[in-house]
Length: 284
Image 1 (cartoon, helix red, strand yellow):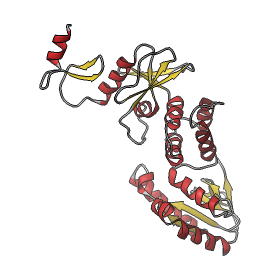
Image 2 (cartoon, one colour; image 1 turned 180 degrees about the vertical axis):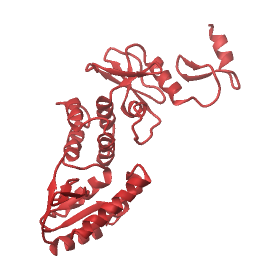
Image 3 (tube, rainbow, N blue to C red; image 1 turned 120 degrees about the horizontal axis):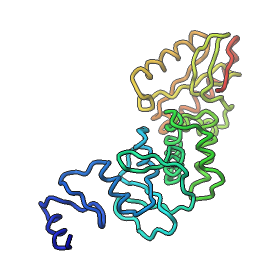
Image 4 (tube, rainbow, N blue to C red; image 1 turned 135 degrees about the horizontal axis):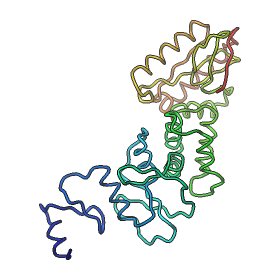
């Protein structure tokens, strides 16, 4: 097809549109996500796969949306990033890839680590990695193995957040609570442990101070996937209260915008707390 023929088809009001240099969509209208992803691969060249947030989306994992598509390419690739396509040259090629509708993309552990290393905010890294683990799409061990001994950009932050998730932090707001506890030098709680009254399971609070009989809950519909999950949070709070546990509720807004009040509330509750007989905790 000659250049004049191409220009005629992509003219204003024409039947085609150019998505990227050398890549044309032969229909009008807004491109679908599949079309954008395929265009990114066609533009990037041979032996390339989608990674990062775009790959997580293709695995049907709920993560914050982004306009960019991250693509892994061989180190010898001479193509330059353009538009919404970000290229990542690598010599550490994934041994296994996923494929759907002809679009190849990284498996969950590699995609999650690549996405996390592209973030600048520790809180965003927490939210992403906790979401992947909480949705049971891969394990902490798989993420740690994928990160390995990497010294690439932001790998130190990712490694620190993985340690937090391994310690029980399952969302960005829970990480905010942990930061406040550390900042105020309060006694360290256990995060997301299972509480039992004898052999009967009670609840799995976000934070638990066994020496003080205090549980902390981060309440937000944003961090629950269905109304039933929110109702379950309220019911478990009632069970803990009935067992003699003092339950403190904090919203993500308070954790971020009223940290002084949250710290004061925690300090007061812990100063008047004491162990609750018959309550034991299990970390799983």
